[in-house]
Length: 229
Image (cartoon, rainbow, N blue to C red; front, side, top):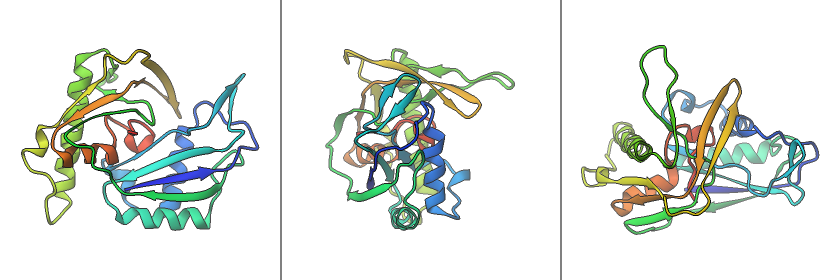
């Protein structure tokens, strides 16, 4: 399930690295929850409708933001929280909320991204994990393994497992025919992340493709990375 939030124009400058503020709003609206300590079976987009002005962002016509859940039970709580405290940050507030059920994409679909995709590699103890980008084949492997792991987590937390071995044969790859991929450096508090703005192709069962649309791809989907359109 996806919730689309229609936001009013900002009244104060929006910093370039606003993503952690969206994450904070998300958890504020959910109030007491255990999602902080779990792998994210949900995804958060970036603001759509912002434009760069010198050293800041502006949303003169407002903005759009979406949140997707694999577990629908959180959607009602998020809506209730947004209605009670509609303020986002920088003067923006929620004007409207629209709900979208998960579409049927078939068994292969090329998704645009609603936020940059973070493919975090493994590293030895004491070292910094590499951040792989759209042109590296290992990035595809990381995105695929991450989604399969989320399937395992979803099965573990459910009395009725959702995904079988056929679902777990899913494959994810960056669209290397895309003409204008970009690398985005994102500052999340004290951490710098190199991520890719490039469409991704998801191939697998219809259930696997729908799952990817909801939970996003790669690392940090709960921190505004890897959301899919």
